[in-house]
Structure formats: C-alpha cells, structure tokens
View 1 (cartoon, rainbow, N blue to C red):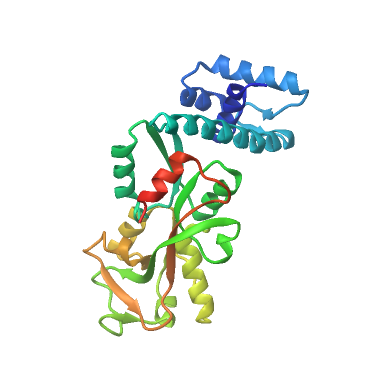
View 2: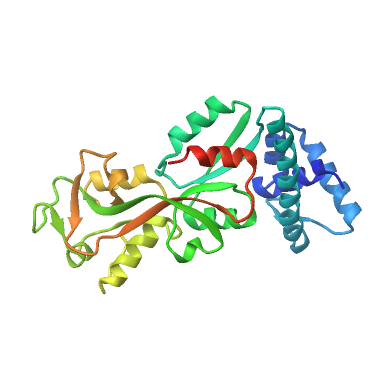
Length: 286
C-alpha cells in the first residue's frame, strides 16, 4: 500500500466523486478509478458504493479514510521536519472557517505567506457542526470558529473574540424603543434565521430558550448576504453578531435589553502535535 493510493481514496471521499477528485489531484478520472479499484483488490473489500448518481464510503471505507488521513499527516509532518532543518517550510494546511468570520485570519495568512511562501492554505467554509466534525476526523487542520463549551470538548482552543449579537432590521420598521428591543418583542416579528448547524443559529436558539420566549422562523437562509437582503426589504428581522451587522450600515440595529445572544470566536485544532506549517500559522493568529 502506498501513500499515493491513500491520497486518492481520501480525495474521492472528500470531493464526493471520482471526477472531482481527479480535478483536485490533477489526474485523469480513469487513473483515479484504477487506483481505487487496485487498492480495493489489494485489501479485499469495497471502499466505495458506486451508483449512477453518487459515490459513498462503505463502512470499511470510512474506517480506512480515518487511518489514511493519519498516515498522510504523519508523512507530511516528516517532510516538514526535514524542510525545517534545511531552512524551508512546505506543506498544505486546511483551515475551516464559518461564513463571515475571519477574526485574526487575514493578517495571519498574509504573514504566513510572507514567511513561508511554499505553504499552501486550503480554506473550507462550512457550518460550525460540519467544521467541528472535520476537526475530529482530521480533514481540517485548524479552524476559526465559534464554539460553545460543549462543542470544544476534545479540541485545543484559544479565544480570539467574544462578541454580542444584535437585532438587524429595515430602517422603516418601527420599534417601541429607539435603540433597544426585548426577546418578547422580537418573537412577534417575522424572523430571518440561519440554517440549523450554524453557530449564529445555535446562539440565538439558546438565548431565546434561556429567556423562556418561544419564536418562529419565517425565512431560513444559509447566506449572510441573502439574510441582509430579506431584512433590507422588510421581510423580516435577523439576529447577527455585531461585526457582521456592521457590514450592512444601511440597516437599523437594536441591542437586546438583557441577556443578549453572544458567541466566542476561537481558533481550534485537534489534540496532539500539530505540523510545522500549522504551528507557523497559529503563531500569527491573534
């Protein structure tokens, strides 16, 4: 069994198909398919269930991919150790990010690029639930993400920012007070919510439960700009972190009278020794 075979299987699993994996690896599809078939024959098991419309890991494939990622990380770390001795740093880092959250990351990426231009960074945008799973299974090396205390279990985390959330509304919408709003008042309004699994949705749901106020959802979106457009046309109101709300200065902002939703943005990584490239990026994230 070769590392290249493992790399191909991991690529097919992560990309969800042979064609996409071939594009990622800069190979022809037949080479990817042949590599997987050869490895399946060598192992005596099917790693993927193949249908006309989809490719999915078998139970054996799921176990294999976890072990393959571990082996590939170990090989990458070995190469990086040798490069570091030679005064060079190479490798690939996969970074998970939530939509709209870049706390400490822009400057860190620029500094890493200046210091180690041979390091490749892959940015993977996803919901917080998917990012946490990716950290656990090793498909993401580190993430800038908002996690509550329970979601941090099993991960190494460092707090970057603690932020209050606010209500965003159309300027034409009338409220009882000029700058403040209560949970009870918001519950009576049409709500623009983010998809379950998003960190914002977790925080908002938790805050309403703590306030003992029930609410409904009028629109559910998975895009911050789409949410702002619905609010701009007065189709609903939306709860957002202050930094994200600031991107839409034409919208009205109201703070909560008490117990405002909030989130903690942090850099998170799996436990254990990180690679030299990951360590270099972590040094620049502040």
